[in-house]
Length: 436
Image (cartoon, rainbow, N blue to C red; front, side):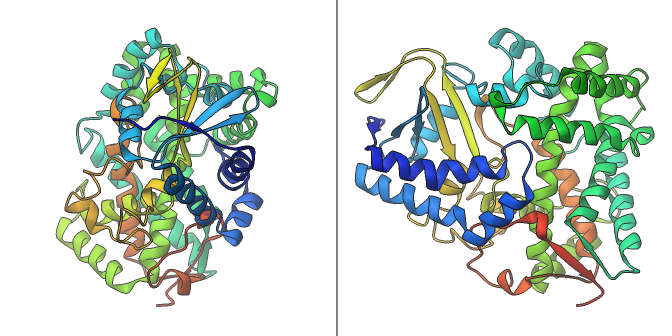
């Protein structure tokens, strides 16, 4: 039976707001703020958030925690059964189009499936799943995607070799060229205006309802996307949306690009750990040698990316809103109540996970993590990320290609052994070439 939500005291609400919610908002839910992520790493904010939530969970016996945030009431869940209920109960009675999310994403993708109405979602979700081939581990266009990934990572290393190093910004530049090629085709590879516009709108999105819309920027972004989608390249992922119409295709692509940004962060963090641990690097090299060229699944590299997402979730909090009055335990919560799943709390729960702070990619291969309702690197249930398999394919091939280089990572002494830091600023990562 679900626990009955408890109202936190004023002091407890303040502690949760200051130690859990504020650091998530400060870092930027839509695009990370470099100074805030650096601050979060210095203060290991995820460790503090976990301690606060664990203490309240122990005090209130796993009951959901209710706190006021302005005029809203947010319910922070602390038990895996509540995570499962929220995610399996999507889109009704728990919609992913939460108040905060609608305010944020409307800046750059007002018609995206994630914040669409129930009626629009019923149309758009199947369109996205078909284009992304959600149920298939290897997309039809995977051979082209794998070739593009290898070429992009090789290009990154070659450009960086004279200086003997590359940093997160260099990786991100190469990554966006790769993503533009995968999503829109080779002709879009150097169209950085798309990314510049998207970043500006995402920075607005960090402020949700508090920042005025800039429709002229969104219209320019949509115009540039439409130019590439009018006659899409044969291997362009977004071309698979064209049967639904140009307007529909243009409306969905910004979210795809947004999602690939999170994949870059996960790949960078996984690369940092792999570069600091020769035994894992050697395992990835051996896997790549066995697989040969082409779009192989690379389970070890894939597991490293998933473990990076477990340890350092790119979705800092999973949000849902109740679409109708909801009975929870002995209490009825009104329609519009917001629910929060703090990913890092569940992913690193030492009370229920012996290796909470350790890098254990094999747990994704043997099924332990896949079977655990608390592990939601791509969300779960009917609103789970439809691009999970595609993103993991690209990220694992990028990681594998770079693992074949002699890389060392700055501050590697913090990553060489377990336990790993609770918060890692991926924007500050720097890699040396040929220094192992």
